Length: 132
Length: 248
Ligand code: SF4
Ligand code: SF4
Ligand code: FES
Image (cartoon, rainbow over all chains, first blue to last red):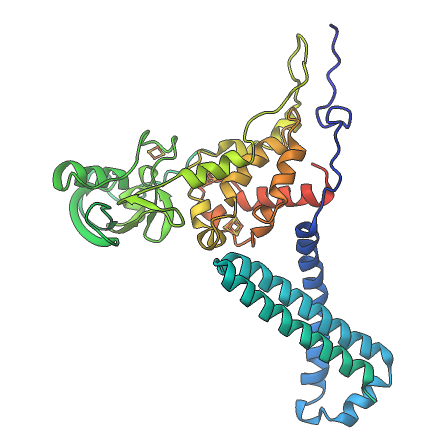
C-alpha cells in the first residue's frame, strides 16, 4: 500500500472530536487571569481617588452623592465590587478544594464562604443602585 | 542540559572533612512517629551526599534505609530533602552542600522507612496521563517523519527521570494528593507536543479536570527542584495554553 503520511494532528487522523473542549475549570482559570489584571487597575484608581486625592475622613454621604452624579462611577464601583468578590471567592474555592479535605467540613466551609460573598454582593449592589 | 553536578571550586577535593548529618528516621516496626538521629563521618570534599549515606550504612548503622541505584543522576531513585531542598543525593557534592546536613524523606508521599517513601501514588498519577506514544494508523513501510523543529518542541520534557523532586516540592501537592502534580504534566507534555502522537485530545481532557493543570499556582518550586533542569512550570503553562486555545 502506498501510504501518504498525514500530519498526525490533522483533523482526519483523529476524527472523533470532543463535544466540549474547554470546561468550567478552563474558564475559571482564564477569569482569574483577566479579572486579576482588570482589578489591578480598578483598585489602583480607587485607591488613588479615595486615599491620595481625598482623605478618607472626607468620604461623607455628600462626597459620594457628588461622585454618583456621574453614573460611570456607579459602574466603576460595581465592577470593583463584583470582580473583587468573584475573584476572591473563586480563589478561595481553589484553596478550599486543596486544604479542606474532609467532605463534611468542605460543605460547611464552602457554603459559609459562598453565602457570605453572596450577601456582600447583594448588599453592595443594592447600595450602589438605590443610592440617592 | 544534563544533570547538574556542582563544581568543587577551590576546596581541596581530597581533603578529609568531618560531615555532620541529621537524618529523619522512621522504623514502622517500632516507631509511632519519625525522629531525628545524628551521625558524623569523614568524607572527601569531592564525595557526594550519597557517599556519606553509604558510609553510615556500611560502617555505622546498617539499618539506615534509603533508595539508590545508578549513583550518577540517571535513575532518579534517590530524591530526598537535603537542607530543605529536594535534591538527588548522588549528584550533590559535600563541597557544594556543606558539612552540616539535614536530610529528610521527600514530602507529600507516605514514608515507608527512613528516607524511603511509597512512590505508588506518584507513579499512578504518572500512568494516568497515558505517558506513551499513541499512533494507531499504519505508516506503511515508512518512518513516522518528524522535522527537527517538531522534535524541538518537546525536547526539554524528554529529559525527565521520574525522580519526583518536582511533585514533592509542590505546595499544592502537599495539601492535595489528588493533584496529578508537575511530573505527570511534564510527561504528558512530552507526548502532547509530539507531532507523531494521536492521543493529544485524551491527555488534554485528563489534564483539564479539577485534578489537572488548573491546580498549579505557578509558584515555580518544581522548576527550582528539578535536577534535570527541566523548565517544569513553563511546560505546565504550555499545556494550559493548549487546553485554552484547543490547539497544540
Ligand atoms: S509551579 Fe505549579 S506544579 Fe510547580 S510547584 Fe508551583 S504549583 Fe506546583
Ligand atoms: S520533571 Fe525533573 S524533578 Fe520532576 S520527576 Fe522529572 S526529572 Fe524529576
Ligand atoms: S542513584 Fe540514580 S539518580 Fe541518584
